[in-house]
Structure formats: structure tokens, C-alpha cells
Image (cartoon, rainbow, N blue to C red; front, side, top):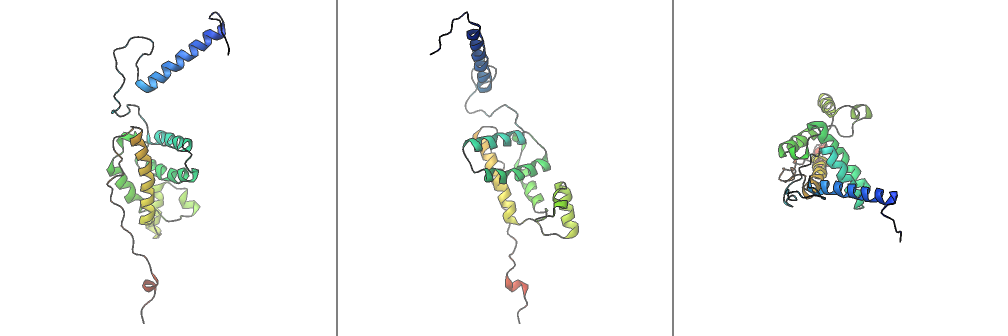
Length: 193
């Protein structure tokens, strides 16, 4: 045990740092409620959404940190990142509370226009240009299964945002899944004789 005298400068520094950290923690937890004085502002209701503005990218960075802390497979996190980045490229880095079902539907529609396994020269282009090249060159586009998986990635992220009270509702819920393209079987490739 360490015993510090109140006159010791180390004691004064320690008390100041603890007070600052306590006040900072209180501001983060309760808003601007004073810890060391009387304040008539009550702590926020547990049912309220966070008033903190969190952009999609900021919230996703927090999501990644939470997943790492929970020892989630890092490959899973890496799989989700392109889906979130594509959403940001399409709608901008909005406050997560501003993302609507319409945005997710438009995201899905857009994904159906992107080329499957584009060469590096095309992949390095902005998504809108990739879609344009896919149309112009008649390239095969992402399958409904791939599009559905990308929406599942977003849904997992937005479900976490709901848990953390950044948003009230997951914008990916109740979105109609893309219809599957008819599979090309051997029968479709050859004429019957």
C-alpha cells in the first residue's frame, strides 16, 4: 500500500486526474450532468436513443472495435467492411439515424449492376463507373446471393447500432430479398436431340 500525504504534489495530481476522468465519464454517460455539484438535470432515460451524432463510418469503427473485443473472427469483420464502404460510397457518410429502408433498397438495386470479379483496372474505379462499364461491356453482374449476403452484412452492423441505441430500427429489416437468377444447367447449355 502506498500512503500519500495530502500536501504531496503527487497526491494533488492524482486527485485532479481522478476528478477529471470521473467528470469525463459522467459527461459521456449522462450528458452534461455535473458530478461534483448540484444540477437539476436528471440522467437520461434508458429508453432514449443516443443523441450523439455517429456517422456510418464512425459507428462502423466502433462496431469493429466491439467485435474485436468480443473476439469475433476478424475475417468476418473484414467481409463486412466492403459492404459498409459501398453503402457510404452510394449515399454518403450520413448520420446512422438518417439511413432509411429506401437507401438499402437502392443499395441492393445498385449492387445488381456491379460486375462480378472485375479486373483491377475496373475495380479501382468509383462504383458508378464500374456499373456503367458492366452495362456497356455486357459483363456479368453480382448474383442475387452475393447481393443478399452484402445486405446481411449491413443488417448485422445496423442490428448492433440498434443494440447500442444509435438507431431505433434496423433499416435492413423487411427488405425483400433479391430473386435468384435461373441457374444455367447442362440442359440449358445444349439443345435436345
